[in-house]
Length: 257
Image (cartoon, rainbow, N blue to C red; front, side):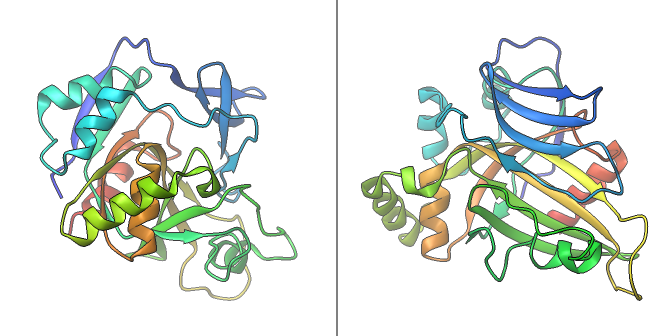
C-alpha cells in the first residue's frame, strides 16, 4: 500500500457532496440533489451507523474514471489523483490505497457488525441492532491497543441485486487470473465510545472506517464471491470525519503495516 498523501480541494463542481441537518447533528452523503446515505451523527458516545436512503441514485460513475480504474494498480500518480479530485467536494482528504478482502454482509447476518460487535458494547437492551437497509462489505478488523479496535467497511451505493451478472463473471475471471482492478470510494472515519458499558470489555472504543463506494460495485462483488482481495482508491475526508487529523493518520498507519 502506498503511503497516504494529503490534498486539499478548494474549488469543486462535483455532484458528490456532504450535508448536515438538525443544527449540524445529522450527516449525509449526497449525490446530485439527493441524499444517498445517512452517515451518522456528531455524537461521540452514540453508536456508529450508516443507512442507505431508498430514493438514492443508483450510479454516479464517470466513464473516464471507470476506464482508468479498470487498468489496475498503477494509478497513484499526481495527474490521476488530480483528475479524481475534480469529482470530490471541497475539503481536505487523505488519499490512500488499501487492499481490502471484502466479505458481503446482509443485515442481520451472524457477522453483521451491528448485530455482533456494536450490540456487545452498547448493549442490545439499550440499542436494538441497527438496520442499514443494504448489504455491505466488511474488511479489516484491527486491534489498535488501549481498548481500541478499527473496523473497516465498504458500503455500496446500490444493492447487489442490481448488478449485471455478466460483468460480475468477467471480473471474477480477471481477478482469478491475477489482475488487480481498483474500486474508488470517498471515506470517513468515526471514532465512537459509549458513555458507560457493562463489565470489563477488552474493546471500548470503535474506530469505524467507512468507504462509500463510488465506482467498482461489480469488481468488489466479484472479489467477495471468490474470496480474493481488491484494490481500493480511497479519499478519506478529514472535515467530515468524527476524528482528529492525527487520529486519521494513526488509523491509516495501522492499515499499511
